[in-house]
Image 1 (tube, rainbow, N blue to C red):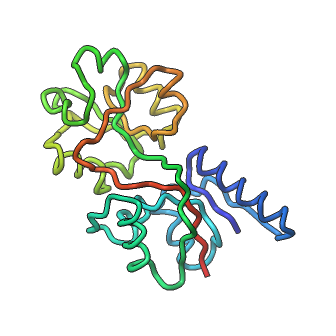
Image 2: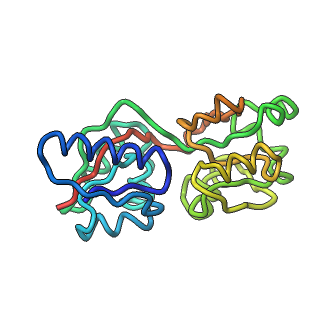
Amino acid sequence: MIGSANFPENELLAEVYALALQKKGVKVTTKLNIGAREVYYPQVEKGAISIIPEYNGTLLTVEVDKTSAAKTTAAVDAALAAKLPSTLTVLNAAPAQDSDSITVTAATAAKDHLKTIADLKPYASGMVLGGPPEFKTRSDGIAGLKATYGLTFKSFDPLDTSGPITLSALTSGKVQAADVFTTTPQIVSDKLVSLSDPKGLSEATNVRSMPSG
């Protein structure tokens, strides 16, 4: 059983793994759009899901070691090797990464001269931040933005996972900043601005698969 998280890129990766295994003669079933990591990881742990596409840094800090300060691919991989339960493994990391980013419209970036997350400091208190519900409690979400950058937003609007609801809320002005994955095509097509992260709030998020058993 190959599973996926609840956003299109992860579903696509799961389908790629499924097709590759089927080409090798392996009988495959899929269970896509399961939910956030907090939902699917326990299913992988107990063996209900055999393989799932993962992102090494987020896997580490959300489920394996929430206190980890590892940021680089090498450091994250070492921490996973040391802390991952013996029933699970991760395959070699791909060079490709898909990271969380605090993203604003081009108009907001120009108006407030925003290039980095740190530049939000004078404005965050008047902004609504949007993102998936779990962003409110994750270490690289609301708590991390406050601890690392001193940012306290006016409020947080729980939306979807870097999907159409989040993007519509951002471009319509319902939220003034949002958690958007860096591989999201609308960053280019809608001329959005992903603010850089000079203090390294987000860890390396190389794509890889995680088999159980």
